[in-house]
Length: 96
Image (cartoon, rainbow, N blue to C red; front, side, top):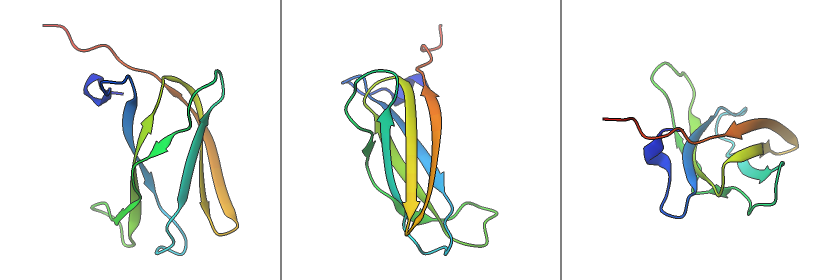
């Protein structure tokens, strides 16, 4: 994560892109830390839009990881779900 995505409380912000089928189906997003106790992932919204080369709409969800660490993310649309694991780290600010 870029250093400027770290909140005053130490949380780490990012944006996740989701492409769903059917394309108008809003995903439900959740996340949990796997390697240590932590509050759950905070999903700040699920906004419909599209990226430049897309023919169909997609969804962008700004999220806040309460802490760095190993996180499992889940997205669900109806009875279909996707989960994957990420290592959330904070890079130090660039030097002078």
